[in-house]
Image 1 (cartoon, helix red, strand yellow):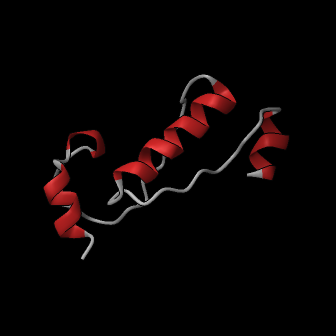
Image 2 (cartoon, helix red, strand yellow):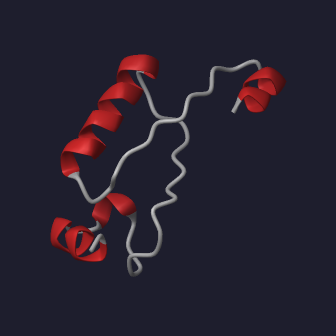
Amino acid sequence: MDEIGERFGVKCVGFCSDVSDAASVKACYSGIFKEFKRLDVLVNNAGIMQDSLLGMIPEPLIRRSSK
């Protein structure tokens, strides 16, 4: 991330979250919006959970996939 920040002259920060824990996701987004006031890029490296967008996956499916 430091390389990206230096190359493009922007602040880059990584936030981690457990997508199977709703409180963790909310805390992550809260931290992002507190720091930047917006979200420009999201890299979802959570693995494979059927064919759904992260924001559209029902909570029961997330919970089943995390076991």
